[in-house]
Amino acid sequence: MRQQILYYAVKYHGEYQTMKKAIEKNEPWEKIEYEGHYLTLLDENYPKCLFQLEEPPFILFYEGNLDLLNQRCVCVIGSRNISNHAYKSIASLIRNIDPKEVIVSGLAKGIDALAHQEAIRSHRKTIGVIGCGLDICYPKQNEVLYVTMKKDHLVLSEYPKGTKPFSHHFPLRNRILAALSDRCYVVEAKRKSGTMITANYAFSLNKEVIAFPHRYDDVFGEGCNELIQLGASVFIAER
Picture 1 (tube, rainbow, N blue to C red):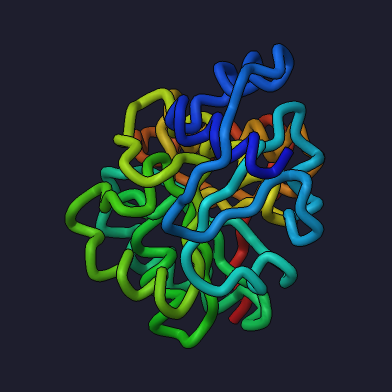
Picture 2: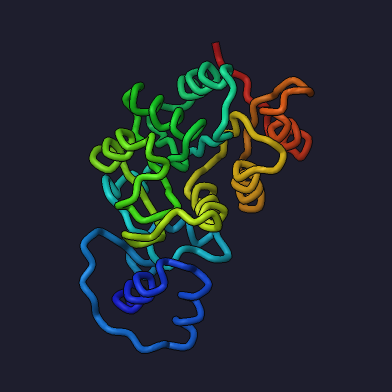
């Protein structure tokens, strides 16, 4: 069954619903060779926290230190287009997180990249979950970060090598971010954004959501303020 899942993942480029139908119909398959590391939901080391999801990934491709999945993780997310204030906010947030906790984010530009970079700078471990094959760097500006994280940290994807970063992959990626983490920090977010999708997944999984408060007229923070109204905790930095 493990090889069967790999076959479907490669054949259907990791598309979850298509793979689900293939498994249900027990479509014909054959053993294939795959150059890369992966684990399926049938494997002992598959992260149990992902079974909280209605649709846990059938397969995860990875590069880096898989043992990081056994440590306590927290999610740090936010907008791709960020304010100048976000740089100070990320530094303050990382300082206030237990050094033993692993920082999880989406390896996108903006807050995600800052969270990974600050984690590395402060000698912490970090996990990136991406929406394309592990051989594709998206966005290109994060190439150095990709290389570092694949070597010394961990990068995950439910998409096999060669899969392009299609836009519909990222909302699905966000469910993994939420499920892997014990709590979710939201630094900046517009009201309609991928960040809000991740936060809503966290809410649905009964994870603690912690949002940075913003001025009422701050477009970068309207999503954070809405999350606080919905019951998210307010981030207050310890001195």
